[in-house]
Image (cartoon, rainbow, N blue to C red; front, top):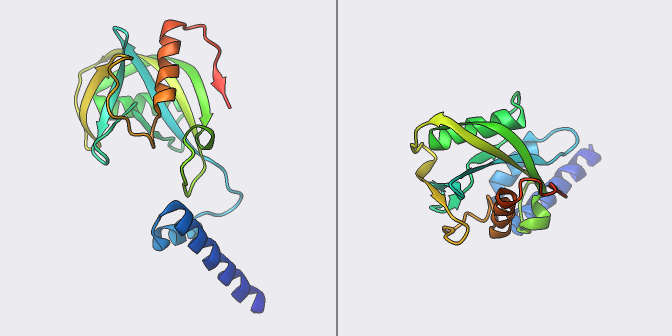
Length: 180
């Protein structure tokens, strides 16, 4: 009985610390802790890298008004390339294929900001094979930008250094993959 109370107190202290560290509402962290069972593993964020005429495809996110590579959380039951294709189509209207792994980053090593989750970011190169440009419930705009004309980036989704690495792959497709 006392052990259960102690563990509940320890959980509350942990929630309070995580809430303070990540600047996330206590209730949100509590739900996160309650929903996670078993061994903790990183979440996986898939980003599609789509070039056309030496410009890179971006979407303007409705959530923060900033620009990111198309992508999102990996879905259970989908391969990474299926997630990339699904996210590109949902967010931009384009159909993509010809997938190539470009990089796998540990978000903490490249975007060290407090977060309630640990994230691996997978960057997958692909080519447009069809579809038409359109926005979605998540995106305000869809545009291609050159390396020297980058928009205001959604840093939580992709950093300027990560984008520059993707342009390096465009210039040298044989460039060694980046894996943390």
